[in-house]
Structure formats: structure tokens, C-alpha cells
Amino acid sequence: MHQTFEVFGLTLKAYSVMAWIAALAAAVLVWPSLRRAGLSPLRALALLLGMCAAFLVGARLWNVAVSPGNYKGSLKWWSLRMAGLSLYGGLLGAAIVLFALMLSRHKSVPLVLDGFVLPVGAAFCLARVGCFLNGCCAGKETDGPFGVVFPSQTKTVQLGLLGTYTIEKTVHPTQLYELAGALIGVPLAMLLAKKLRLREGARFLIYGIWFSAVRLAVLPLRELSYGETVTKTVYPAIYLALIALGIVLLAVRERKRPAREEEQK
Image (tube, rainbow, N blue to C red; front, side, top):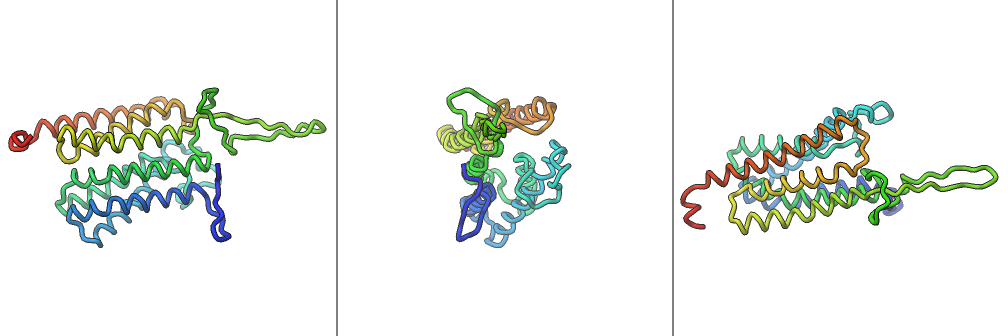
């Protein structure tokens, strides 16, 4: 694991580098979809910048709410550090900006959401690579074959005349578990929507259902600093609610399919 990179004499943090690469990759991948939706280059750029800012704000505020203990030290809620960020808070913030702009411009929200499946999946995978390199967001201890030892999980104990003793903690690489799940979900959502000839927005809903299911499955293996209520009640409830909501919306949209579309099938 490499927590830092040396580039032209500069020391860069792996997590921060991968996070910004992820954001840039998402912007590049979603750009054609925004243009096809009828947004001008200026409006598309403004939307992406607004979503990025809203993601960071939402991710920080969500983290403050679920883990206030993180902010009793040097990390403050107003800090610009790439730390103390919660994914679903960020997604909520970005979604609010996206919906607000698209609805105000009378654009097709389902069409645009479908265009975000690949960009969001790619960005998440790149960000999780950064987490793995940094050693953060690791899982609980394990004796299984997939266990990994991160430098941050290793401690050296001084034993006086006997020298030193290194204590290594082997943990689940939950970053890679989630990365694999998110990666598989992208072609799965696209193929299902195409094969079943589902309406616009189906790819996004299928991916949202799959992604939330992956997060729910990996949750018991993660080592989180949140309270037990959050990890065992709040987050499972959120994931289950999102899965159920996605299934209901998918069913409702398909039931309302116009008769002409059914005839074309």
C-alpha cells in the first residue's frame, strides 16, 4: 500500500489524488449525456461544479451527524481536508443539485440519471482504489484467505533488551469488496435494462438497487467508527429502504408504460 506519491518532488496523498481523478473521470464520462439532454456547455459545467460542491458538503454534514466523535480533535466540520466524508450524504447533496437544475430546465431526469450509471460506478471504483492504497475504510479482523495487512494496522512494540515486536492486524479489504461489487453492477444494470427493454431511468434504478445491496452485504465486515445504533440499525435501514424504493419505482414506471411502447416490444 502506498499512502503517498512522489511526483516531481511533491508528496501527494494517494487518497486525495484518486478522489480527484475519480471526480474528473466522472465529469468526462457524463459530459456527453448532459449534452444529449440539451444542456449547453456552460450549464453542463455549472451543474458538474455544483454537484461536486454539494457532494463534499453533503458528505461532511452526514459524517458529522453519524460520527460526531470524529470532530473532537483536529478535524473540524468546516475543514476542507479529504477526510471525514460519508458517501451517501455526498450522493444526496449531488442529487439535490441535479434534480433542481434538470427540473427547472424541464429536462428528462430519467434520461440523465441513466447517463450517470457508468460515471458514478467508475468514480466509486477509483475512489476505493485510493482508500485501499491509503489503508482507510478497511474491514474487521479476519483469518480468511483474503485478509490484508495495512501499514496503518501494524504496530511496533518496544520490548527493551529483547528488541522490538511487530503486531500485524489482518483485516478484510472491504474497499476491494465494494469496488468489485460496484464494477459488476455497471454492465449488469445496462444489460438487464437493454434485454428487458425497460424505460428510461431503469438502468439507474437497477444500479441503485444493486449498489445498495452490495453496501448492505459488506457492512458487517467493515470496521466503522460510528456508534452501534448507526452501524446495526440506521445504515441497514437506509440500504433496505433504498432497495425497496428502487424496486417499487422500477415496477411503477414499467406498469405505466404507454400502450404504444408495449406494441413496439
